[in-house]
Length: 327
Length: 313
Image 1 (cartoon, rainbow over the protein chains, first blue to last red):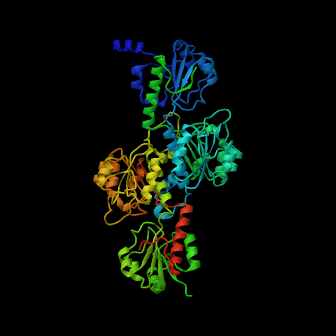
Image 2 (cartoon, each protein chain N blue to C red; image 1 turned 120 degrees about the vertical axis):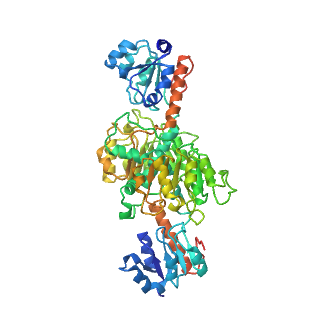
């Protein structure tokens, strides 16, 4: 017992404010390599915990749900490395990290395939009414009602991908095989991409029946999918969002769906998770998912390996495996 | 010219009814007080039958129609048609291949994704209003999983093409090996199931393929395996499928077809690892229209002595 405790104290320290899902899934393995400062387990408020225990901590593990503000960073003055289990960085004050010369690593590409798979799954589901039809069968309505309303074919649909990073490209590769006609909007045109570029989301929407949101949430992209874009998309339009809820003006999206101004939506993310606008619960043309695009056993294992690798690299003074900004 | 009598076995498409009524004389037995009497009264006027996956031109119907010349089915499947009888009597048969291939393949992939990623379960969870942050369940990744396809015809090939875009290695079983593909061929279904994580049933239903997916195949696929059926219900031994799911010998199932539609085994309703659809593989507005147009064009071609567009016999 004593030897184990001594051994633990020789392990590099990693501060954790709230346990990310990936951490919980592999806690035992992680704790064998790092001494975890579990702030959430402490009875004292986080601020006091940090003042008491984290003054010399150099590394921190965070999830996409814990805001890493400048005031948090202020309380961990020796921090030099943050590893986030998310791909998204909208929960972190990156400017402050840069100022403090804190290196940041995220989930890199480990989740791209699973997220792309979910985007495609949601699109097929909305267009072909899969979840709604499953409800119809489970409700034993099929023997009574017979016919089920027709869906809409995927092939030939013009799909606009908003944000053509790793996830957007994976979505494109998949939807091409279904006969969808692709175009995209991105911060900059990508010369190696063979399908059409539109410089703004409105123009993209005007030329598509489907929008798949795959970009990061930043100041520029906040509420980028607004009334204008949804109008341009039109009554036959379908929106799929596997990125961040804040990219879409949610009130406007709900209004459009309720009033039939767009045809449907597949949503994994919302503006105020876990709150979801209740008006959506009564709609058969929406498919709702509780921000689980990355929650597969395979992604969790891959993410864990990446997190381990990032911390091992940091503590051996080697380059991070999936750096977002290096200092 | 006297209107050519076309017998439609059941309601399938109001557009198709409209068009046939315009061009020919449409007989709608479901509107009669006695189907039997209606048939008896009008049998001699019927020169064409339009059937579907529910009610086709079976032995009894063909025998009742002495002047039947053509069966134009609103489906690609032929299992509800007595082909032997039609051939004996020189009755032509047409179906609706190609126009529905994409839709059915889309649903096959949609079912695999919905089953493995538990999309319906997630939607139910959110709609229940009980989503709390931090609550999660890990599902199974689809990309990269090995896909085994039973039947590499038009639909099977279209499924393979889509699965490839997800990085899935493809293998298949078919009546014979196909020289034009690089996919791995297994001459028997048990070996295919042994070497696949997702087994997709896409072959036609014949006497030989009935229950092609049986207990042995299901056990070979195993507790992490997923079955997707967009072919015909009787291709799978349904009671065996149900018990395998209940006992955990099979990981999951995405089903668009059942042995006795519209009856679905009640035991499946409580399972989170199954997705159940009411035979909607080709049910998009676009495809149904294209299928109906093909039926009409075949009928028109026949009665104008032109070559049939999509003849089977």
